Each structure stands twice: as C-alpha cells, then as structure tokens.
Image (cartoon, rainbow, N blue to C red; front, top):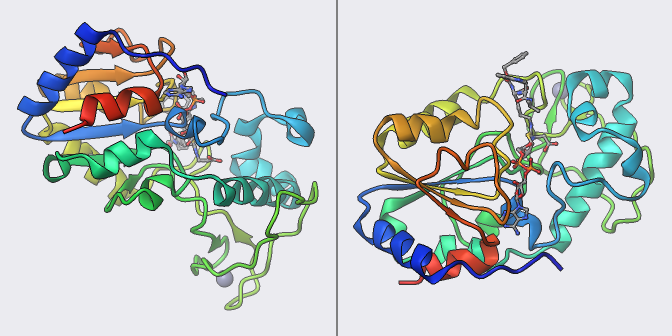
Length: 255
Ligand code: BV8
Ligand code: ZN
C-alpha cells in the first residue's frame, strides 16, 4: 500500500486559502496521481517479465521498430491493468471539486482515470493508452479487441489496420516523438492564464511537459506541489505538500 502521509495542518490551511482565492487553477498531473489506484509510476521498478526492460526504451519508436510484438504486449498488459484499476480519492477530489468552474486539467498520464472519475476536457500531453491508431495511415482503432486479463503473453503481434493493413500502435507519445501540437498549445495557453498551478505526482524530469510549471511561475502563478517526495520541481514550488495525492487532494479541495 502506498505510504500515507497527512499534510501539515499549516500547509493545508495555506494551500486551501490560495485555492479559494485563485481565479484560474491548472492541475498538472503525473504518474504519482495514479499510484494509489495500483498503477505503477513510470520510474518505479517494473515487475515480473517487464523488469528486464527499460520503459524509456519500450516507449520509443526505436523500441517499436526493434520488436513491435514485445512493445504491443507491454501496452496490452498496461491497458489490462488500467481497466482493472479504479480512480482514487485524488482523482475524485479533482473531478468533484467545488472549484470545477475554475480548475482545468493537464496530465502527462496516458490512463483514463481522470475521465472515469468524472473529469471532462482533460489535456493529455503524452496521448492516451486506449487511443490506438494505425502506424501507417493514422486511422483510429479504439475498438481493438484486447485480452481481458493480465494473462497477456510476453509478445503479441500488433493487430492490422482494417483500412490499409498497417500495424496498429498505441496512441501515446513515445520518447523522441513530438507532443501533439494542439495538446501542447492548449496546455501552454491554460498555464499562461492561470494564477495557481497544482503540480501533483510528477518527478518533473520529462520534457517539454516539465516546462509548464516554469511557464506558470514566469506568468506570476503560485505553485503548490503535492508529492510525498521532493522532485525536480520542488524548488520552484511556493508550497510543497509532502503527502500522497489520495490523502492531500480531498483535504485541499474539499469545498
Ligand atoms: C520531445 C507516454 C521533441 C508513453 C511518456 C530536453 C528537452 C527536450 C526533450 C528532452 C530533453 N532531454 C531529453 C529529452 C527527450 C525526452 C525526455 O524528456 N526524456 C527525459 C527522460 C529526460 N522527451 C521526449 O522525448 C518528449 N518529446 O521532447 O519531442 C523531440 C523530438 C525528437 C527528438 C528529440 C526531442 C516526449 C516525452 C513523452 C514520453 N512519453 N508517456 C508511455 O506512457 O508509455 S512520458 C512518461 O513519463 C509518462 O507519461 C509519465 O507520466 C511521464 C512523466 O513521468 P512522471 O509522471 O513524472 O512519473 P515518474 O514515475 O517519473 O514520477 C512519479 C512521481 O510521483 C514521483 O515524483 C513520486 O515521488 C510521485 N508519487 C509516487 N506516489 C505518489 C506520488 N505523488 C503523489 N501521490 C502518490 N501516491
Ligand atoms: Zn492504416
């Protein structure tokens, strides 16, 4: 079970006051937000068969070219895991927050837990796990039949595109690929316009996403970080809530 740390009362009070008085809040979330839903974070050691592989290698065009069946099996096992997971109290607090009118979501995560908690209009900087598309003609293939359980083989040939026969790939942004232009432009515009950014569950090492909190600060926004550990963004934060997302967010966002 993930460590549960309660935020210090004084920090929570200050953070809650900033949230109430904020005009426009952007939440910038990373894999740590989904940790308490049982989804391993990106830099957590992989387990089982996947412990042999470097996620950054698997999540790359080179990895796909080298062994598409290995990469497709890895994504199918991750999809099965996300399907079995539930949004946690952190996702729900973000979705149900009374500040819904002034809170918008930018995520690095490829899972659909924000949406399944009830969040609308989430900006996915790194794509979406279930938005498969043809690697040749780009046709969307959200309807790909997937094995229902975690008993996914170690290698699985990617399905063929019904339109052109090309290999269907995961709808995520791999290392070495550009972020979707519309997602980046929307995220940058929301960031420039916010006066408070909640940075939740990210190590802040993946670029250019990790530039967004810097951009927010440059535009005069306050930064609150929710992370049980320090991250590459902690020095930038005006307030670091050393607690887990599922513990801290309900306290900070409770109307
Ligand atoms: C690009 C989809 C241009 C795939 C992902 C300098 C400048 C620009 C680029 C680079 C650069 N240096 C290197 C690069 C290249 C690279 C990069 O940033 N590499 C890193 C490793 C240094 N960037 C790219 O390639 C990007 N594209 O730059 O395009 C270009 C074009 C051509 C050639 C070159 C450049 C594309 C990056 C997108 C990669 N795709 N995901 C997939 O998922 O399979 S990123 C991947 O990492 C996930 O999406 C994940 O969300 C993301 C970031 O990681 P985090 O979310 O922060 O997760 P992490 O595990 O690291 O940390 C978890 C945190 O949670 C920890 O701090 C932990 O303490 C905390 N935590 C744990 N439990 C909890 C918690 N917090 C709260 N509550 C808890 N319970
Ligand atoms: Zn095709």
